Image 1: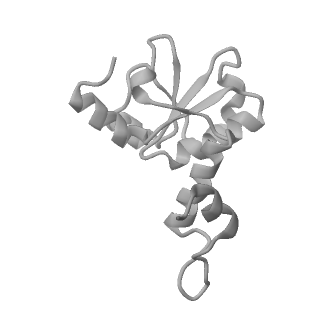
Image 2: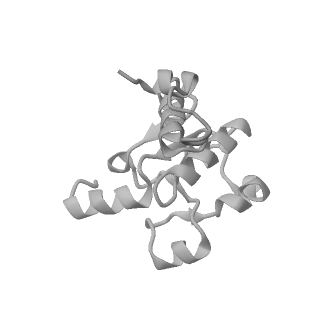
Image 3: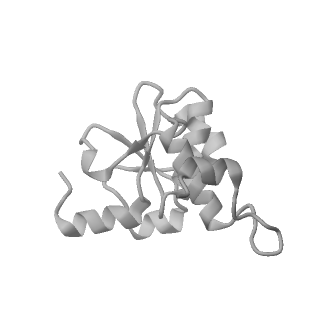
Length: 136
């Protein structure tokens, strides 16, 4: 059985002629291992409270089309320049389209002294949960 830990550390399927280090299976293994070991903290959309700070890491055009109410938009590629504008006294709940950009943002935020959570599955998951009626 391949676990997230064995996948991330052994890279059992990595062979340059057949795949790459950025293969989706490898990336999923790295992300899962980081969640299991606590490197990245996860929060689920149905756990969001009204007073929570929500950070949208998508592009301005993605944000303009749709988003979560009261979210603040800071595209991932601008995050380093906007750290001073983010609250240090609140947990930052980050999301993007499917979770990759918010995962990277959480790593950046934690390394800069913020308490950050990756909203699991990104906006795609949020829409599915909203349509199912499972949001608070």
